[in-house]
Image (cartoon, rainbow, N blue to C red; front, side):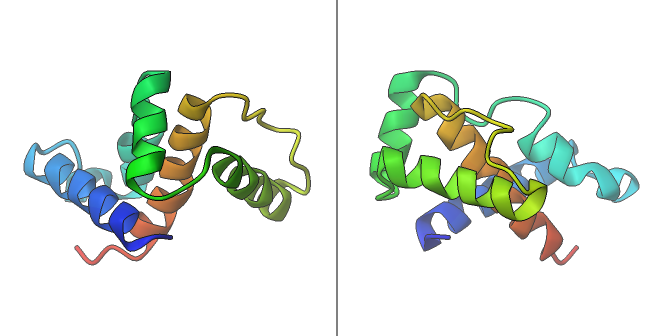
Length: 105
């Protein structure tokens, strides 16, 4: 994971903690609330700009998503990454999982 993405997603988690969306009581659901309950980025243009900001090519991002699916589900047919919005939101989900799992409360 690129450092800029890590810093941005960590700030997202911090913001949710400060807003009391993520609490000690719902710690087991943090990943869901932070990266799966709603889209991280909405809009194709915004998603494309997010990828550019973090130096991730559109095809590179789609390949990372498919690789994650192969490693975790044995197949890359679970999701079709045919637009930047899907790619960015799946990348946030994947990297968010790593951030939440390593989060020190």
